[in-house]
Image (cartoon, rainbow, N blue to C red):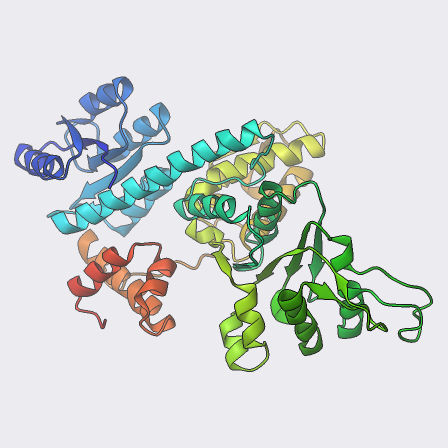
Length: 453
């Protein structure tokens, strides 16, 4: 595990020293501050990867320190440690920029798992920065993909590793998460970059039209085929063919796609001639293809041919730390495109955008911001420019407990873990992915709450 520079901000001497000694024993470099004022001075003069920040302190409280730290260096990971307040306090800290929270008395095993998660994320970020530098030297940019989220960092790194191969890639994720952007990035990073990437939406065409669209046809192949037509496979020769909504592929076209993946050649409609084509297949779906296979609506042999490498796009509600940068990026983009004099967004409107859960994902955020820029009358986007009011719909779960912060958090954690385990049939690997935690952390939580495992 990568060793971190950690600052402990805690007014209780015994608690501070206990955390310090434990983290040093794990090989980390640790500094201390007994109050908020000293913490801010320390952060201003040194580099830290992680701050363990007590919420309730004399003088400046944890929220004030958190805001000040983020102004100094937004990249520092901050974990709030508290035995006070309610679940809303913890949520507010996350909204301001805290990575996570942990409650007193601190369980050292849980703290270690959290620190390991930070170390893993830091390693991915550094790897990603090196990747961007290398790509920059080659004239390749990933600027169209705005991200800080650890899952997205890992996804971009995976894209760079698979790009040089000819392996088929299946990109899974909800509608609007940016699957096509990842497909284009893989193509851009591949040796095929000087050839075309051709995009076909498999759900947008009827069966007979889709077959002709993909494989082409000879003159007279069917009524209305007045001339030969070159299909998308031949257009993409030497490049990449991106098949969006692959789960909608009709059975007859599934057979022909499987044959291509096995033989690397196609036949136009109305012809028996085999045409060799060099095409890399990237497909995407917002459906559960494994369920489609069990229902015999999708060929199992084709499914495994398509998923040599599988990539899963996280929904926007699971990458909330990306929201501020995404909002700024698209605000600037649409302001320039529409030649508007928009200087920014009010705090109330931004707060509303940060709270919303975006069932339509990034695509919905883009539509909301474009509309806001277009209809705005003033220099700042206001709540009135958004398509929802202060009661923006959310999908947050509510904790059953109305007691202490610890009770509220534990109720909420148990609900989320139970839901994930039920959804995946007690598959810990898949449940951990859904929950955004490591399998080790999930096993710890299952044991802690005595949940089925």
